[in-house]
Amino acid sequence: MAHDFINALETKQSDFFKTQASNYLSQNHPKHIMNYINHRLVYFKKVFNQIDSSYKSEEPFLIICLVLWNLELFFEYHEWLEKKWLHSKGNKKKAYQALILAAVTYEQLEYGRIAQARTLGLKAAALLDQYRKQIPLCFDPDTLIKALTHLLSAPKFNLDQI
Image (cartoon, rainbow, N blue to C red; front, side):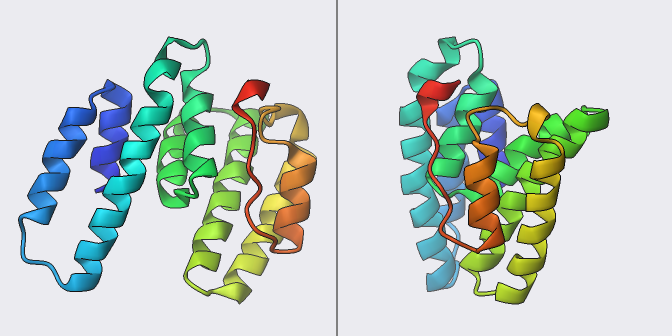
């Protein structure tokens, strides 16, 4: 489902995702999976609503990152950012790795995996500190480092800082 969502974001076609999601819902899944699909559908609609006008921006990639992060869609944020990470080099690649690890930290917290989250959070914080000059300013490194180091709630970031 996340891959379909990322494809829909890349092609700017929310209808593609709606069609794919309908296919998932038409299958006979256990209740907890149906709840997950319905939850994601609600949030994916929010994402498309928030970014709809943002595609005209000079930084649509970052706007999508911020929207996914602020809605706490960390798995999807990770998937979205990984596309950029795969084609990056050097310090920029390390900066993207730090942001991906930050998202994975919050994914782990979501599932109650505190020890794993702590390990990943400290690693992400160290990379954020080391490569802070390559971190987009909209992801305030100091705020993110503090949250990751102490396993605080994921901070929200401002779209106006892009």
